[in-house]
Image (cartoon, rainbow, N blue to C red; front, side):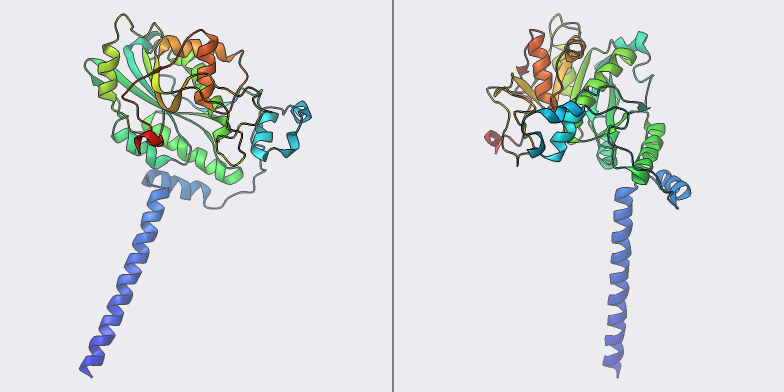
Length: 334
């Protein structure tokens, strides 16, 4: 009898432990999605009962170019490439989130020595939080200012899009470090994101000395960057500088299964100019302005780092390699 009682207690304890694990797991998953308590409360109060919304096209602010479908083999292309070709000409989209004083105003923007420009997605809240607390933290080092900005588009449609935009707005009210435009945040729009940022820089932060342009999944040593940049002789951001993981003697990948697939309908040439991998590269404000000016006359290519190389070549400039940049996806480092 005593043995049966012990077994009963053991079973009950096991059940309780399982319930605790399940609830903790659910708490963890919810915290992964909504880490900010403030964001969670706002979401529950404003979006507990979603209202029916009309689904908007991904490029709702730009008319598609129907003539794009006249190129040979258009309808054999993947849908995302067809979509890219239809809207390739679109370069102007409404700004949803801005930080006009990020650089202290245009007149004081020269006080920013290094501006960290980080490409992110609306859903990557956890990544942004990690970066804010680690290498992308805004600070003063060796007497110069480091500032950061995240650049994003929009994700999903209808209610889900509205929810994400609201959360981003709350996040930006707290941190004041997000630029958002109303275009679909996708791989094929990375170049568009770069162009829109450069246009913003012309207006809001024209005199920042140097920029790190990178993704939200990289690790960077901003202290080493400052030391490297301060060691540039006779270049305070007013001369050409573009360094990173140099890639050259390559061309478009024509295999449809590749993430980087570029068919001849997008680019006929079988070669790319030298460029630095888009994971991260350093450039001067002079070079950033030059790229923006060149972009006005160069057709958009989905691969943003290659597009940067195209703009440099058109301006008679070249990217350079630096041993401090390592791409772990490069088989030479495996």
